[in-house]
Amino acid sequence: MGGVMKLVAGQAKSPKNNMGAVLKKWRLMSMLGMRDAAKLVGLSTATYARLEWGYGCDAKTFLRVVNWLAQEPPCIAE
Picture 1: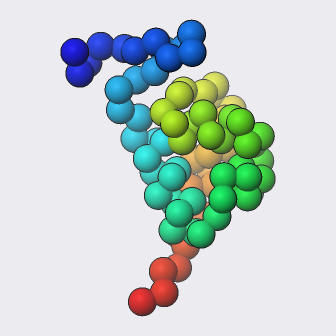
Picture 2: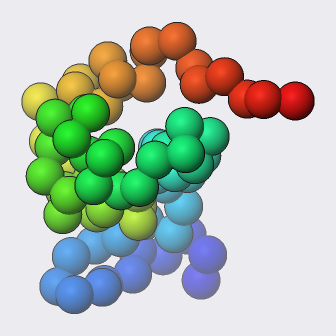
């Protein structure tokens, strides 16, 4: 049942959401907590968390996230 949509808390959740994985990786590479990342993106912590957990969003929120991700990636100390 890998391709079947699951119902979680009354909302459809895709089994795999790449945007959520990218957001989480970016946040961790930036050494940010969810609250700080949400603030930088311009979203509420709850909305940011839902995105990271794989839930969808409206077009305005999607564009806000894409614009944030389009910035220079965080530096990683070697």
